[in-house]
Image 1 (cartoon, rainbow, N blue to C red):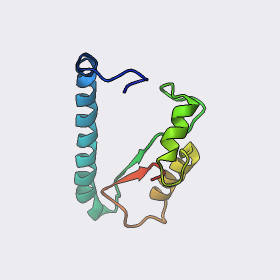
Image 2: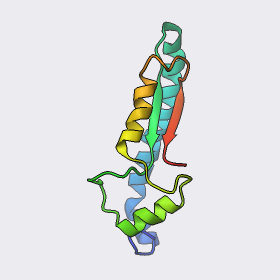
Image 3: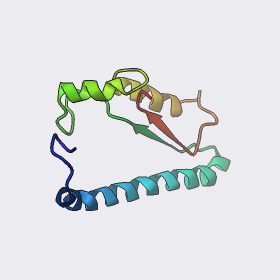
Image 4: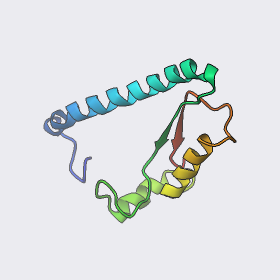
Length: 112
């Protein structure tokens, strides 16, 4: 279902091209991350991707009702949506001197 409407063949066809570009770009970023990590690691540069899941913000790019937010959160290990500060702390760690070895990784920050 999409927005409460059943996903029909017509609707799927209408949006299939968007999914194709999204998944292609995402795969390219993952491959580029691993390649850059191998190429830049010898000179001390670490390369990672942070992949947040749905994050609870005041301004969602798409409208998600409180009911759907609660439903999504109930399926997560932590039973709530992450907040931007939690994603930011992961990024801060990865960019800090405390991270000396994590490279070439796709790090999900999604609440499990």
